[in-house]
Length: 189
Ligand SMILES: C[S@@+](CC[C@H](N)C(=O)[O-])C[C@H]1O[C@@H](n2cnc3c(N)ncnc32)[C@H](O)[C@@H]1O
Image 1 (cartoon, rainbow, N blue to C red):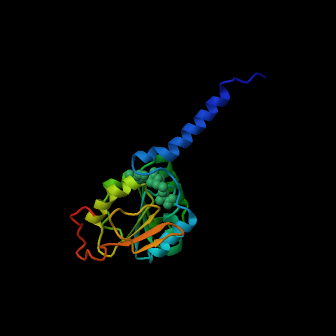
Image 2: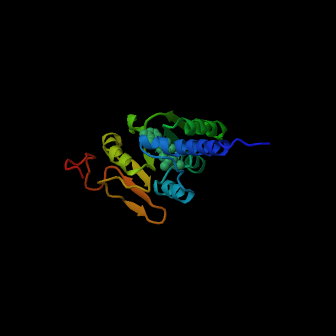
Image 3: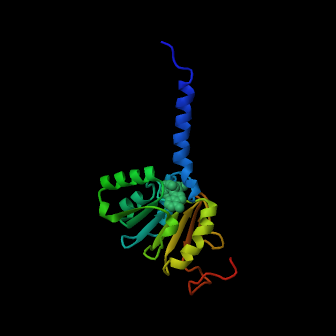
């Protein structure tokens, strides 16, 4: 049986296009896709000192590496925001199968359209340009005492309370020491 010589290149092209879309399309919004590695996710949750009274926002929830662990281990209320529709569908399926779905709220949309006043903990694993854009939004809406944990990228101009070099996780507490009124600095730092 003769095989069409264009078949293999077409299949390869389709696979590369689908994987490329899945990983990189959301880059336009603030980050591509890479699940938070297990060790880093556990360290983020540990450093955030979660209790069942906390509301954790994961900004760019991916397929849920962080939020489902947080609910399972710490019994927090988790809010996941995700812009990419296939990952959002995966999140919805995982929530439907979760033992305690009432603790999980999902938003399909752009994290930059949200305010974070309800969050006691915010988690991020975004790329540096998005961290720049996120900072003023955090400063405008975080409540005093809120913690921010970030994997891989620091919040520009903020001083971390902890940086775990092994997992590359940063912990911040708002307002930072030295900004006791919670106001953003005016010098852009
Ligand atoms: C590096 S992944 C992190 C995934 C997730 N936090 C985890 O624990 O595995 C970044 C995610 O942020 C999403 N994302 C990027 N920009 C976004 C935006 N502006 N609004 C909502 N989600 C965004 C991407 O689609 C991607 O799923």
